[in-house]
Length: 403
Length: 138
Image (cartoon, rainbow over all chains, first blue to last red; front, side, top):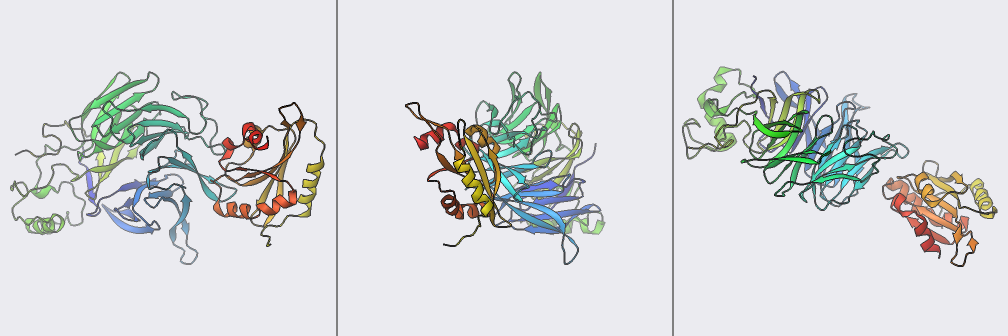
């Protein structure tokens, strides 16, 4: 049972985060046009690089673990592939961007490398998904569009382990599975539960939840035989295509916007409720298990539980006086009493994240058995959770404090 | 008129040979590409007796090409003729610089090959079928 590791990377929302292969660096977009790369030095994360090329907000980042390339997508309708090369003048390693023309006329919302890292998929607001692959002949990233039958912005995508199938969640309230087979890049995939003989843009399945609602997050299970999606009607649905059987879990909490599988029979979802929730099940049924954020333990002054900020080891910088000023600076509250005492002026949540969690990614372990997950949110914090540390969801209605 | 891309004499000879080759049955095609580094046109390959759908499979998805096609056309009264058709194969996913070069040299190629009928195929393999060619020629 280990407490989550929390790092405050800033006060601005973190739109997206991606760790590199050995988890020594993380690329983060702090709600801006630039990517900030943090490197782990001891117990903290320090800024080592800033990648500036995009003209508008960066919506999503993905870091390919084996080929060490970063792909970023932005509201400026472009994507850049960044490669670490040696600068000829200084000899240092710098990140060199390559523009990828997506040929869309709306913002790009989400990007993910394929499992073999030879293609990547970009979800866009142009009712299309751009599948980009590298054309050796012309030295150029080529994009092909998955269009039919998407009717609105695509919000999230996830690749199947076979490098061909792609799940997409869209604002037209549907979760779909497409075939993104590119002729010269992929070899014919073996038949799976989703179908066989799949030319580009075949729809292998289209699913929605009972009350509808934007599909914010989709994810394939580690083997790729099961699909999970979270939609805005506060449900999480798990689809077994061979039936087809869909298990929908309706929740009392606010909707989830991101999810990730931790094993073939369990997944973690997070969203507007500000805490990661674990679900578990099999082909026979699915249910909510608990939360990774144990809100029932009593919190010390101001809830600085497990804070990785510099100075937490040193006693004198952790006193109440310093904390009051830190509170006043970051949260604007000037109350001299501790946060737990005052009722009316207190705006702090019991959970680790103080605002919506926007992104949850596997951190350590294999795809079949993830040990830790990392989350970032609108509060500017990065947290790393132990997946086995599941606590029961108490009657505190998630993070809401009732007096 | 300035010529951005040169057409070597060997290519002109190949085109003449293709034009006057006796055809009995089937459609034949000669595929030409623009070499961006050397700024010349070069012949890629020639097909004897290939269907439009197979030709669409052979052509690259992300690169522009010129295709001179000797198409076996069956008229409504049963006659068979073999008109020459020039296909401007220019998928939109091609690299922009190459696409512009290809477009600028197209008129030149057309006068060299001396073909009057032109079919533009901009969307890749879906745009080159027997139906589209028949529609243009009949």
